[in-house]
Image (cartoon, rainbow, N blue to C red; front, side, top):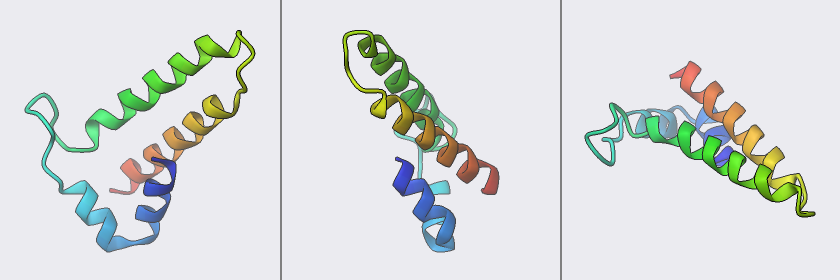
Length: 76
């Protein structure tokens, strides 16, 4: 997700394509609306496993992905 939104910010064509995709269900207004919740759930899930000795790399990656998503959403 992080790389997708970083690339989309650099390419106007890709940015327009992602921003104008239809939603996967009628629950969402746009296609990208489900992504923020997905990233939050991924981060929360990995935070639960960090206490068992897993690395914080997945949590850090999800935070970076959320920053890239928010930057993309602000640009669109």
